[in-house]
Length: 83
Ligand SMILES: [Zn+2]
Ligand SMILES: [Zn+2]
Image 1 (tube, helix red, strand yellow):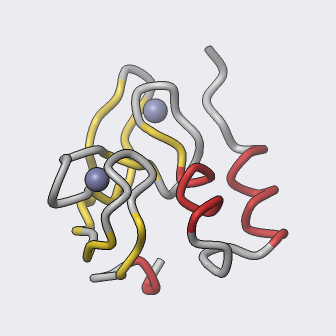
Image 2 (cartoon, rainbow, N blue to C red; image 1 turned 120 degrees about the vertical axis):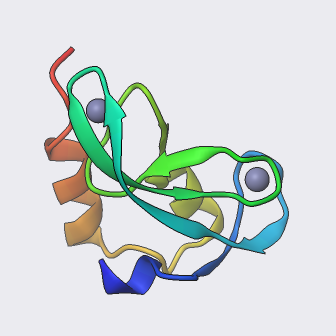
Image 3 (cartoon, helix red, strand yellow; image 1 turned 90 degrees about the vertical axis):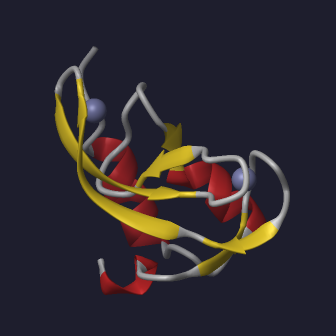
């Protein structure tokens, strides 16, 4: 997950290009996640797997097309929480 450290991305929530912060071990109702946070609107995006408690990194890939490759996108989607 090295590439998510201090990464410059366009936020899908506020549309600004900002350097996201990386947060380890944030809890949801089903477990814990690694997330990145927009410093402007403070939206959280889970980067380890899809979770209904946080925004999806797939929203970011729509604006930042080189963020994930096809394999990473399918891994992310297939490891979503059952809920
Ligand atoms: Zn934002
Ligand atoms: Zn979760």
